[in-house]
Image (cartoon, rainbow, N blue to C red):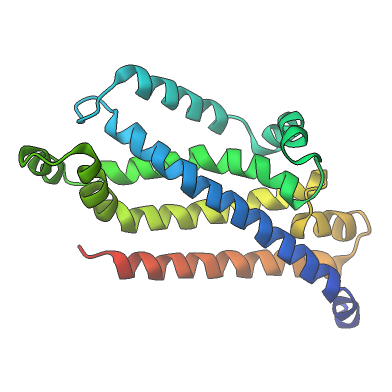
Amino acid sequence: MFDVAHFVSMLPDIGKSFRETLLMISISTAASLLIGLPLGVLLFVTEKGMFWGNRFIHSVFGFSINLVRSIPYIILLVALFPLTKLLVGSTIGPIAASVSLSIAAIPFFARIVQTSMREIDPGIIEATIAVGASPWMIIKDVLLPEARSSIIQGVTLTIISLVAYSAMAGVVGGGGIGDLAIRFGYYRYDNTIMISTVAILVILVALIQISGDLIARKVDKR
């Protein structure tokens, strides 16, 4: 069922696919941090009763996030082909797949950041406002530090979700481990490749989860 010699012969292809998966995950994770983190903070501080409470802004961004999150990833991937083609000039390959992965990850992570900040003791925020701290100081010195452990766990969850999404991207030529599993494991009935790709994904997710938990515990000062 599992042919070791065949596995060894396929190592160059497996290595290439693994690097493509890491590339997709890295790009989309960076996008989710650069855009999703500020967006999540904005959603929280514009909630009713907060220092930047703004129902219109909160509703617009909240609706947009819910809209994207309600679309199954495989449908979103195909729907974004025109945008992907415009941005990177192709709809095939890991860079092209990173566009849809990023758009899927940004609202997902934004909601995690918002939820993480809701867990902060309201008394801490009220006390900071009472001493005259500026909104930027509240965000920088209170919200982010207090929520950092939960946010790191959110980053871990986001990356793990991206691993699954990147595998789906392989169905439509996104490259990576998913593409290898489809082309060789499924279409060619290659059990060795199928088992190998599943094992790689399981190990990768386990390492991400363990690393995320360790970092979250280390930065949690509560």
